[in-house]
Length: 138
Image 1: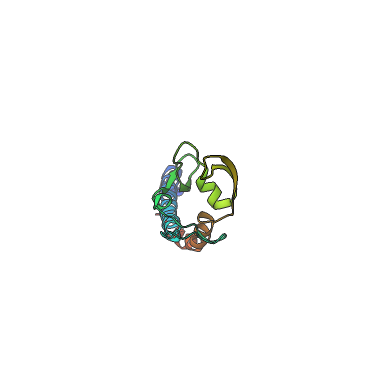
Image 2 (image 1 turned 60 degrees about the vertical axis):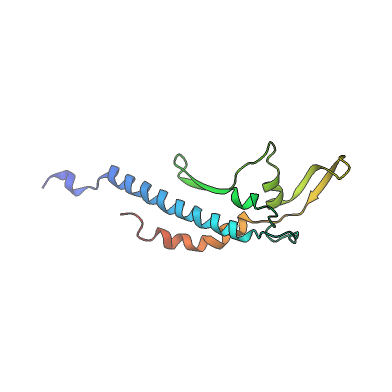
């Protein structure tokens, strides 16, 4: 028996764990994206502060994506930027102030109360993650 047979192949183990990480985190990102999209109701009414926002046209729901980052070995889930200013998604998630035109066309400061949708979706799906890792490295 050769001495190398007594040790494990580091490259093969590392490749297997990288494959499993990509697969599990991509699946987790898809679950979080689905949970976030389903929490945003499509209706004309304004949502209450502290609850997920309403989507009057459906744009916010369509712009939630996920992507696996191979360099950091992590997954990123959230709305993509749209328009020239990327103010809407962070304002909806965390609240804040922004300059908006009123009906007369004058610029005014508007205060937005938080209507989180990504954080609660992540927290709702987080308990699934350990079960997804079980037996994933082959």
